[in-house]
Image (cartoon, rainbow, N blue to C red):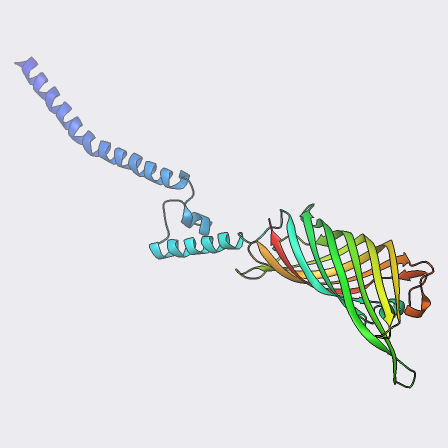
Length: 287
């Protein structure tokens, strides 16, 4: 009887202990679960919201659908800007403009083609980038003139003598260009300004044929040829689009050639500077 009472009392004690243990176990498990959730929030990888605001932690805040669309549009606009030419490949430019001789002898010599001494120029150049700040350019220019004028007496009356002439000047140039990195002056989606400065050397060949006549039975033909080396300096600016550009350029050159004995009556004699000031409009294509 005594042993039965002891067993009964022991069983009741175990049930009471288990009943008291259940709430404690549930509370402990709840704390562990909460700790896992908080720990994962602070140790997860960065999300879009966190990139936008460093005070936010991953998983605690995100962009709405409208904000994500706006962000995508911003990224697309940035990608469109990077499509502008970075000038890393070769650039071919077509050049059109005019040369004004700085030497009065040359101005008088080509008076039949242009009385002010401004003659047309056509050319093409190829440029290659050396680094973000320097490029090298090779250029071929053709300067050509043809025309006629009538000589007058000192009092302005016609002399009855005409001068018909034609000349060509070929120029090969090598230029070192300095410029800032591409897109430095970017100011919109359509393109950007690209200024530059340059120094270089050149070789020129000049040829001229002049026919002095009275439109009847008198005709005297003079020919002159000369060549020489010179230097030039230039400055310009381009507006660069996606794959092409337009620009303006101003250059100064000094090139001394020797016409030899020549003929002083038409302004061709001895050493002469056939350089001058050149103003150009250019169209470039990037490859």
